[in-house]
Length: 124
Image (cartoon, rainbow, N blue to C red):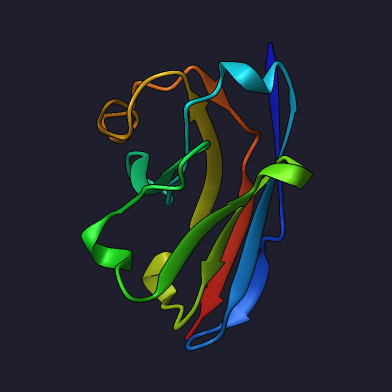
């Protein structure tokens, strides 16, 4: 099994920044791809960004390109999401995700492991 624990959410003003972290424990060798999803109130969960655990290839949703950066520190077993130029519409619960399949598969929501989520609120 794999455990994912997010941290770093909070309240920030529009234009501000936050860095989310996802600590990975357990059978980490089972992971090939990791990513971030978010779910705003009354909306479906949506893909934000993904990264391959070994090689560091990345993929982003169009609405975060140029503002968010996904990264991972293999030595610390931690994935990050640096969020800059935040907008009120970025307000959501952000979830860490991990899977054994490709980025394409994870983008489509085929995720085996989920974190519990961390709230991000951006005020206008």
